[in-house]
Length: 424
Ligand code: GDP
Image (cartoon, rainbow, N blue to C red; front, side, top):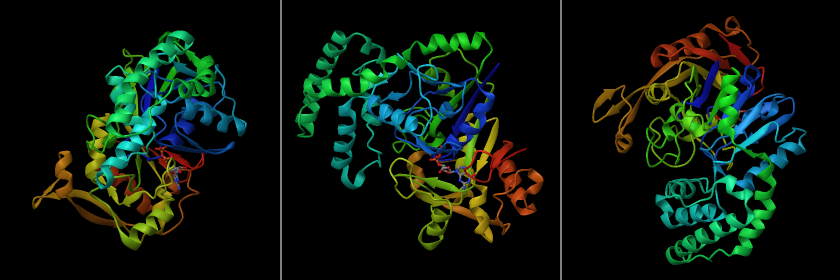
């Protein structure tokens, strides 16, 4: 039995999609267990370059079954568009290789509107949402004010349920935000254009996974974002509205009894962060611009330039602990090749005292990075495929990270392509 999770250790965008795409060769089932289309997993393989938002990254492997668990924000519109885009590049997406939990809740069209309206109201205090409706969706889900995907099977009943929800939601849309109310005609269009299309993919994925466990299949849980965006352990309120930690995987997958056998934490060789919120190790100016360009650090969903900085060992150690990572995949080592010496944030300075501890979210604003400069290697490492191929200084960079965060680095990624990887 093998139950693994691939999770982000930091703020997201660590390269999880690339690692799932690589590792799916050793798994039978890949499950997305939380979040929605608000992030992008970039995958480069022989079929092309893809930015996946909701589809599990195992979709490219023949024979792998991909599951959207009950914990995801199931947006039928975005999902259908994504399925069509992927199919247009020759990747089959069928009810055989994609199964959607009938217990997943639907992200309704007004969730996106509410996200946008609230960010506009907040103006310069905005959260930096991707405006995909994720926060309004999860709050409505907790209030039991959305619809389970399986309800779509009964056309009359789902329309009655939606009509009740619409009446309630229109009070907020018109009363609080002065926006136009929803109508059943608009929802009817949405039902026909998107919900009908995903119906054939719905099933009891919990039962499927229980059976898969009995048969000894290998299951891989794919997370979105990273530990610092986790609703419970992250940099609240600049978190997402779901749990990005591995501990949530069994629940969000719809297999609460599952025990994870290994947790692969993905860490980028430097730091990036999209959107608002504290980012202690942030770099600015020409130095930041150079790193951003070298790493092509622009959001997969929004195209927004990502904030960049040196590797933050304080945040990374915390992320490793929160995820219970058993091994690390270190990505984008190749990007640092241009640096003569490499800045690394080794501790924080808070109230005049140096600390290794990741502070309480509101204390982060007072934290300053303590930066050390580690030796660079000064040559292109993107062709390295074995540990011995890496220059000494690059190997030391990896080993020092391992020592500092207390978790073995098992994979070192030196390029976005599937085979640009060193397995130790
Ligand atoms: P995810 O959301 O964690 O999957 O990360 P993203 O897809 O948002 O961001 C990772 C980006 O880095 C993607 O564009 C990948 O193709 C790219 N990438 C992943 N690993 C490497 C690597 O080792 N080197 C380089 N140069 N690019 C990488």
